[in-house]
Amino acid sequence: MTEIYKEFTFEAAHRLPNVPLDHKCQRLHGHSYRVQIWVRGPLDPKLGWVMDFAEIKDAFEPLRLKLDHYYLNEIAGLENPTSEVLAEWIWARLKPTLPSLSKILVSETCTSAAVYTA
Image (tube, rainbow, N blue to C red; front, top):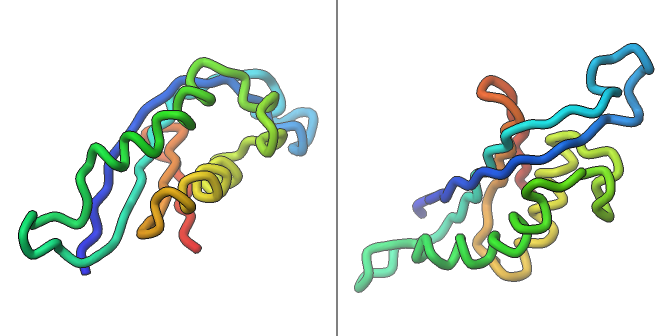
C-alpha cells in the first residue's frame, strides 16, 4: 500500500467559545489554514499511481469554498471550530466521495496541527 496526499490552504476566522473567558482563543482571530488530504491504496499497475491528485482536488474544492474567508463558527458542525473538530468535519464530508481516504491533517499555524484518522 502507498499513501499520497494533496495539500490545500484557506483563510478563515474563528473563536473558541468553550475555553475560559481569559484564554486568547476566546477572542475572534484568524488563521491561514493548511489541510492535507491523505489517500491510501495499491498502485495501479498501468498508471503507476494510487489516485489522480486531481480527484482529491475535485473532492475537496466544494468544502474549501465553504471555509475560505468565512467565520467558521457560523458553519453547521463547526460551532466550536478547533483544529481537531475541523479535521473530523472534513473527514465526514470527504469519506463518501474518497473511500480510500486515510488521514486528514489540519494546521492552523506552522507549528500546530491536528490529525484525524478513523
